Structures are given as C-alpha cells and as structure tokens.
Length: 206
Image (spheres, rainbow, N blue to C red):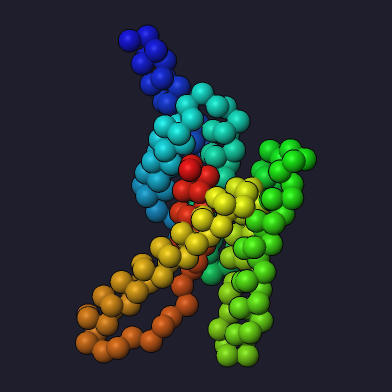
C-alpha cells in the first residue's frame, strides 16, 4: 500500500509539473496569437505524462527528457497549425536533448539515423520543387533532430509512423469534406508536425 501511494504521489507531482509547464506555454502562445485550445493542451499533457510515467516511473532522466520533448513538440505543433511554420530553435532544442544523452558509442548510429531520415526528404523536396509541391523545412529539421535523439530504429519508426498517421488522417478528412460538399476535393496543404509529433512521442516511449 505504501509503494502504491508513493507511486501515485510521484505521478501526481510529475503531472503537476507538466501542467504547470504547459500553462506557461499556453500563456506565451496566446500572446503570440497562436490558435490554442487550453483544455485540449492540458488533456494531452496529462495523457503524455501518464504514458511516460507508466513507461519508466523511477527514471528521472527519462521523464525529464520526455517532458521537455513533449513541450517542444506541443509548441511546434501549435505553431504549425496556426502559421504553417515552426521556428528553428525548436529543432535545435530537440537536437540538444539528444546531445545531452549521447555516449560516444552511440554517435555513429545516431548520425546514421539523422541521415536516413533527412536525405530522402531532401531528395523528394528537390525533385518536386518545380511541381509546386514541397516538404516544409521545419518538418525536415524536427524529424531529423528527433531521429538523432531516438536513434536509428526508433527514429525511423517514429518518422514512418508519423507519416502513416498523417496520410490516413488526411485521407479520411478529404473523404469527409468530399461527402459534405458532394464534389471531389483537391489535395490541400496541411500541417505535418502534429502528426510527426505523435510518431516521435510513440518512438520515445517504445
């Protein structure tokens, strides 16, 4: 019983810290005129804290990095939804989280993970630029930095999972729009970072 109470207190404290951080972020994002849904952001924070805590309740480093990663991705996703862009410092923050955890033996695989995620995106961006189709630079930077943080297997899985979620979600949204309008809807640009963020957080929790 004592261990269970300690577990609950730890979870409550960790979640409270997460909600406080999110609260400050919401205040800052509102000042910058981001499209912010307070209840949704706090609900996502509680859910993310629960997933991180269930994965490794007593690893303080894991929890701290996970919460920081979640906060950066939440900010980036909200900015992408609002303005269809994300600032460079967000990808730098994710990269620094990876650097802080790195050991010399892991460096080659982490660099390989970043290259495996970045190079195909760069080639696609270059080959489709003349057609008016482009992959956002922020998408590439954040996914590459996340691959460096997560390592080769988890980094690639996170990126592919994010793309899969994006494709399925946008196909469903397109079908719903077409059904409501009664006409075939053309493909429209959409914020990719929120979908990538889901894949990245799942990759971190794995």
